[in-house]
Length: 144
Image 1 (tube, rainbow, N blue to C red):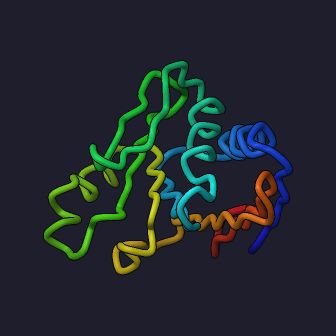
Image 2 (cartoon, one colour; image 1 turned 90 degrees about the vertical axis):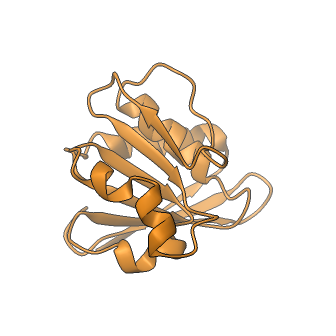
């Protein structure tokens, strides 16, 4: 199934992601795609807010993974931009996080396409339409 939403500003994206988070029950992998500056981290901020996390949410560019705990579900925010193979992916702890029962939000998910399998994967593409507008497409074989 596929759903599309057009966001006219950052707060629309935050609110859409916060509402979307209410449908999550744990164990989902949110595979985010979109170019630099598309709004992937903004979407994850909305997920964290919707899950009840009250702290600061930042891009995990250099950390590879940021953990946001204390909400309804734990959220693990990955940046796979620099991941180039299975050894790199293993070193991130990705497979251990999969077993945590939390939500994994993966920026640059196309770099780990081979590891994104199963009905728990929800794909989200964010496409800039203008300086402020974004087209957010959500699809999954068994979700939505």
